[in-house]
Image 1: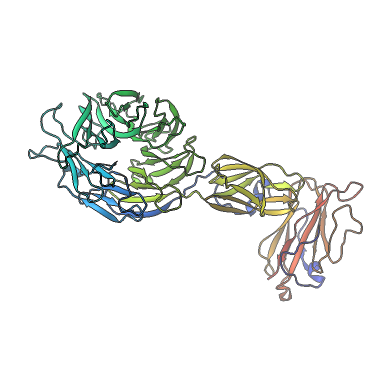
Image 2 (image 1 turned 120 degrees about the vertical axis):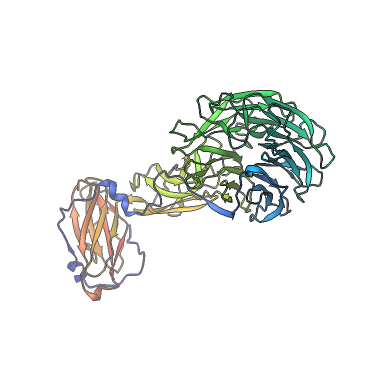
Length: 634
């Protein structure tokens, strides 16, 4: 192969090469494991993506939030959130978090006003989505925490409907009304929006009952109580979370899930699915051991198994499978309750599963993906918001901040990917985007003989079943690209690559990542170090064990050196033989040389190349020329 000219060259007197000094050829080479250290690694192999981008932040003490629909008509979903510092319920712009509406219906004990909020559909027929607010700490004239539930206009914040508890009646009283709220759509077919709300447990505790879920409808007369549809009671179990699930039993009506604390106070927990039209129990699941907190949170929105029913995500923050209070999320079929897969926390006290939700397809595999929040016992700074594959629960990305609530909010920034909004409970409200731009950390094997190309593995992050996924090596597409995980893929390098280092480039719909010199085709030569006058640099030769190497240096005029078999002596003018190795036992040879301390050499480029192979002479010559390395003296 001819000499290649990576940059301009300067003529140099012949004594330049003679004046290079090099030490004994007996210097041992570095172990093979250190060969790739010449190339900087972007990240550790297999490290998960910590991809996060804060879209906006609102410094507001908040407990609950939900998607509200597009209130201001800008085409972006807005956010309803409680504001404990006022107290009030606010509607925030999905674009920048600015306040669009605020409603402050009066004082509330324990700061529970807006403890539960939900966007529930168009209640008053004005074409805007409205909201439901639970205020379990609201006090009546007797000073009792009876609680209340209020439907508010999403357009104006005006009160549409109202209901509050009382001192005597159901159980020990119908108190703590509004511990949880959810929109059910039209469950009874009358064309009006229906709701459900929880009654009977102080919201800061997993308390024992009695408790109740009540379904009501907006009956057309504003500013009065809701019309009751049905209720479902637990004599001892304490209601904890309420979530709309979609149509589970195929009757065309929205059904719902609830989590309930067992009356014995063991903090095991159970989850029940109820018919939204009648309250009848459809199926139930239970935790297995004390303080598991099975059902500490519930999430939905994603049909993962293609049966037309959204799956249920069950948070179990007290799970200890991976350590004390590491937490777990069970993904179960919404139709049957069958376990599909599980996701686990990793650190003791993480309380993985504080909240979870399904969001759109982020990784491009055609399935919705899942977001899980951790709110650890050690504080929000040690928590996480993590993105998982809806196909198998693999972690795709994470945000290093804990959250008490997290909700999918649609595409807030116009990039076509769904974003999330979280609250850190009593601290602030954040809007986040997951950035899945790929990274390339390393290649295995990192060096291959040029005539023995085979499958290589590329390690990094952001590898998905993306139709836009392309792997190139020095701009030439690799073949047989197969994604084995979010952090690994395999491919076959293109044929006819030159010897020497090659950049490995991975391109997806989210971006491009390059590992410079990530794949080396041997034989190859490198110059390690800065060729300053008087400095010592290393000339590094890579080859297969027991290869022979003829190393040469030279300067222009450029000549074409044929690949063996070739005619002529080994000394090819104007190139000078530096040394010859015969059957060297390892895969690398490092030759230290001292750059002459001669100012006249500044700006001179010296070329380095070697002829390497098992047989450089005889009847069956099979050596190959390496790449050209340049010693730039300055």
